Amino acid sequence: MKLLTLFLLVVPSACFVAPQTAFVKNFIPRSVTSVQSPRYDIKLTLTPDSSSNLPKPKLMKKKLMSFERYLEVECWSQPELKDLQPVLSSVASACIQISKMVSRAQTDDIYGAAVNKEGETLDDNIQGETQQKLDVICNEIMLRAFCSASSNVAAVASEEEDEARSCSAVMDSEGMEFGGGEYVAVFDPIDGSKNIDSSLPVGTIFGIYKYRDLPPAGVGTFLQPGRNLVASGYCLYSATTVLVLTMGKGVDGFTLDPDRRMFLRTHEDMRVPDSGPLICMNEANYGEFDEGVRHYLKQVKSRGVSDGKGGFTKASGRHVGALVADAHNVLINGGIYGYPGTRQNPNGKIRLMYESNPMGMIMEQAGGAASTGTGKILEIVPKEIHQRVPTFLGSPLNIFELDECFKYVNE
Image (tube, rainbow, N blue to C red; front, top):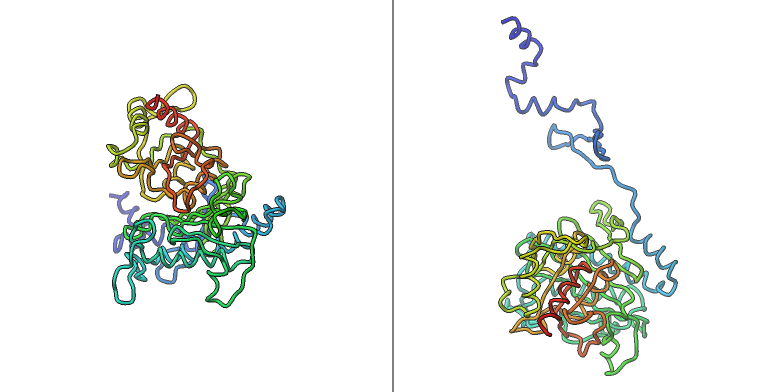
């Protein structure tokens, strides 16, 4: 009884009146302004929250290199690419703009199929796909990002448009004139746009070539193998917005700081693991896949994926339905992304110029591989700007095993 009396004297009476509220209020003393984790390198600064009595945690900012500073350093070390600096800076700004639009697509009613002034759904694009509202809007953003930054880009080709366009034609409505630039750009403004309706990740992909006067007139300059790319990148719009870029000397990743609205380097010299467990394919189409792919999938399911040390690791299936999201997952964790040919679509559905080549360059620059199953993607000379190819990207050991399966079934 004496112990109980002593306890009642010590414990504040407020705890018995409103236990939950009192506990939260008294858990962190008002005099405390920061909390340092004893185990991890994390420090929180506590500031009052005007909407409640609870402290509002605010993470301390890391000192990271900005994307703009990165471009300055890279273009200084590679003077031949200096003219790309304003172009890539403009593309990064476009990605920030698209990121905001993606996050507000539901509230601003810019998701779903695009319609005309009469409310009728627009005709399918050149790919035979129903254009989404964001496809149309983001296409315009990317066109102007490449063409308005400087006079260094002569022409652009978009996955959303039937034909390539000169920057003079793109900017004609703005009353601006452009001469012949040194570069041409290709891009997919929104990869996986149907994911918007389900709040799943989407992305932007782009590649830049040196301008070459090749036949046929007007389009020949785009018909270059991926090996000729001077820069490639993608932007992933997900839990965070991540911009990944290569200028031919490794791969770096930048995360968008939403407070400062700028990209900061968070992934320096990215390297894909030599092998990995991820299998990013839509296996609902398994029965339609090329025989080489079916043989590979049977193999990894029965024995696992080679770990590069003579052993095997259990495979793990992942498929988001957006090339950027799945390939980024593979780049970080190792494995293989694949969009094989099928009986209905022998060349698959991935566009060589807008998707396979830029993503293939990034993967190879990160130490990975890019294959069609029978050859290297970056060695293919396009025959037309909307050409499609079976596409496999990922860890070198995973891609090697896939290629061996193709050889085995074709012997």
